[in-house]
Image (cartoon, rainbow, N blue to C red; front, side, top):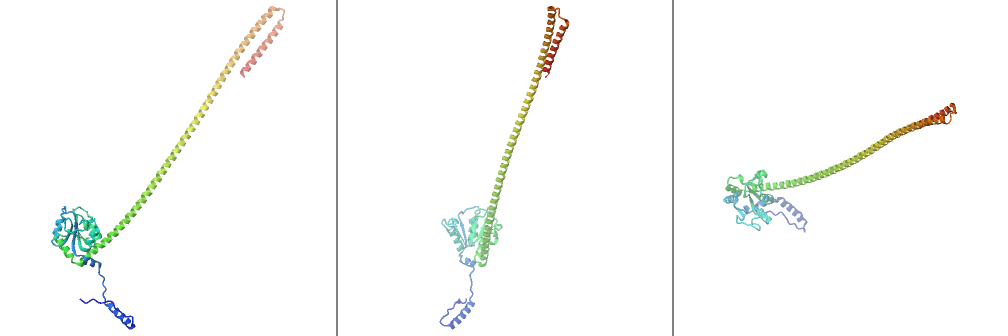
Length: 349
């Protein structure tokens, strides 16, 4: 291994010749320097001192994960934190919730793999154990559970225990991968790129959801306003119809009352006229009868007076001439006739 090369030169400012030569020497040395920036993946890989970590609080579970891990420990070192192991992290020694940052920082700095083992094999069930490691820690997760992880996440970003026939074979693979720097860094980069994609997708989904919610709210508000407007219009129309109906009914009632009054008045007038006519006819008839009776009485009285006068004249004076008697009788008859004629004319009028 060649000794490190000095990439800087000291130049005295007292001698211009040294300044020129010093710059030339400095440029020559800088051209020979190989300035290399260490990759972030390499830095992460080299600072990790241990292979596998597992945080667990429930030991005896239906998935028998503790037995699985004990078999893995035959081929790879696994540090178990919590009640089921000998290591502690956080206040309770195992919690990913209490002092979560302390445990995540411990994983990032010291461990290359984390066992994300579920306590039951439920279909499509993925707990926070996987998401916490997948999103926040520069550590490769190892999955074991009932979910189809390869359908939910890119298979290059994690290690599935279902790909290995035995826990020992999985442990052997992790032990080998923990010493393969390039392959480990490739998987870690793939996981981190997926995290970026997930974050972008989540942001897009959140934006879409917000937009959809806003659109839905706007649509709901518009629909509610439209419904309110329609209801108000319907109410106004109903009120107008009721008012028009009342006006029409009142008009019909008024017209009917007027017609009834007119009919009653006409009937009363007709009745009065008829009564008047009938009464007048009866009165006229009575008057005529009375006049006829009076005329008859007058005629009878006249006849009686004539006969009595004739008798008296014959007895008192026999010397009267027949001519004077007859003339007197003619005059009396003419007076009676004229009186009867005048009475008949008055009655006819």
